[in-house]
Length: 127
Image (cartoon, rainbow, N blue to C red; front, side, top):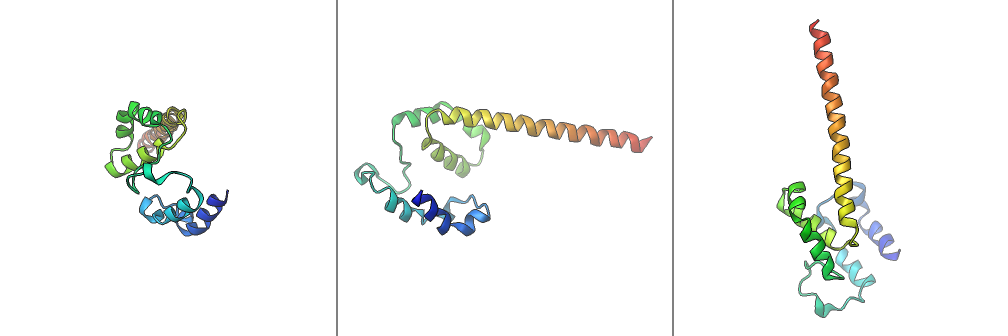
């Protein structure tokens, strides 16, 4: 709770502007070190290395790697998403894909409905 409170305070402007650029949050490392110093540093070889609690996470994301690449064709965005998903509980990734598909289907239905209404309006205007 303290980490969240301090994070939201420190990055209030970025959060209010819904910034997704991870570089804007780079100084969050200070808060991570303050609140999560219980992770042994000898197992972390790089500041950019994802902190994984189990090898199951890598396997989980690896199983869906092609789907991730399809959803996020931009390489940087793909790597950011993959890194974040590696940190999530094991059951969350399939739920993420399911929710993504569900939302995409809803968007497709809305766009189809919109196209249908535009076509109907065109026909009416031509008459």
